[in-house]
Image (cartoon, rainbow, N blue to C red; front, side):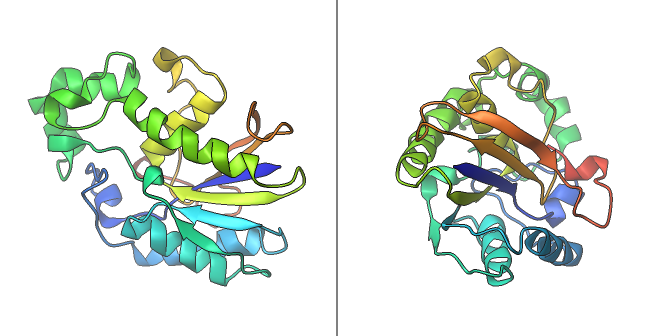
Length: 218
């Protein structure tokens, strides 16, 4: 089976280079709805057995809009395990502000996941996010047939960590493939019901009419 991991559309805070996290949220940009339509058109004839999404508004809206524009409308289920990182005190702050106030936290979140101490600012560590997401993904992979397709709509930082973990990338190297763009799709396959995963495509945005900018990627 294949799992299509989709990052939500671009928001106001994405544009402003602010951390959103699990508690922060901001409106999706008007351009994001166009990009959701483009994604749905690209996968229009792919038969998805199910769509699972984070319940946070930006992901929920992205999943719902994509679903209604597919040729076949699959069931949609919201799962709290698919939420974004809890980023504690960083949520709502600009990247530059975090770099100034929490220089080590900023550096480690971006470049050294194994050293990142999210709990020191009231948030989650990378291992916390992986440990809550992995059981959900493994369960999803275990209940569908080998030729099924499933879509997961979630968030950039959480998806990056979880996808790389599923591919057995060590914690220290989780960022080696780079970030995930808004409204991007990363595809993994499994032929043993979620025991092992293979990378099919990473951070695909070829279907979007505009090229991702620096504020699109995390």
